[in-house]
Amino acid sequence: MSFSQFQGLFVREVKRIYRNPLVIATTIAQPFIWLAFFGSSLALAPSQFLEEYFHTTSYIEFLLPGVLSTSMLSIGMFASMSSVQDKRFGYMKRILITPTTKSTVFLSKVFGATMRGLVQIPVMVAASIAFGVRFHIPPAGWVEWILALFLLGLGFSGLFLGMTVSSTDWQTPGVISNFITMPLMFSSTALFPSTGFPVWMRDISMVNPVTFSASLGRSIVTTGTDPNLMYLAYLAIFAALTLSLGSLAARKWLKVE
Image (cartoon, rainbow, N blue to C red; front, side, top):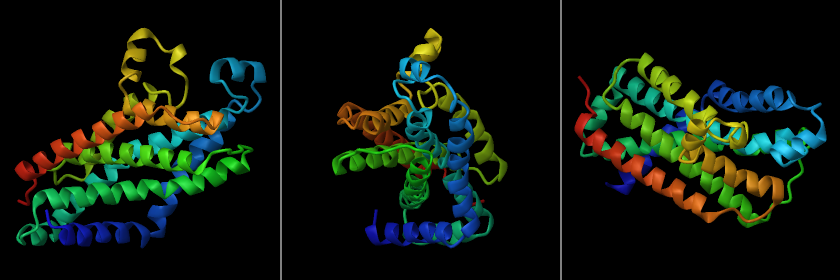
């Protein structure tokens, strides 16, 4: 893979995102709505209940790492939609007749989609402060939390795009996203602790990458302590696996009819 080719395609993906104010607004609004409406649903819950069940007196404090994690889960759909758009408008065909490898095209879209998800972090942190959350996080903690979200975004962008790499149908990314996103979101600890899950759902939660990202962020936000670095290792393995399999899928099935 040529780095200059990857850089050019990656910059194009980023520019496509940040030149469209509506895309940025939508990207930010979705997790903000979750935080504002879903987070406020337990605003009047007794503090004793919150401490016993969520281990914090603020449900929004508990929810913030989970909302950011589920947002990184869903951004993979946009990598798939970008690929479909490029195929339908002829751009992909022009790229594939150059020496640029299919893996380079795949990786540029994955990293571009992940950057789209990262723009949510400062906005959501600011919103949570407005809702009363107070952060006591050392600089290393911020780096570890952002890295965890970055790896989660890479992993799911690679997964989504790898599953839809041969598609030219606008509807396919949305169908795949709905099929994967909802079960993974609700079987993770993004919204609720796993202590209230049935056994079969708890088993899924224990291997769900969203759980690892949400738990790592939550340990930093709610306690200010160093996270379990095994969570980062798990997310790194998940990202490496999906990127490798997605690159193989792109080399085999990425084409323009």
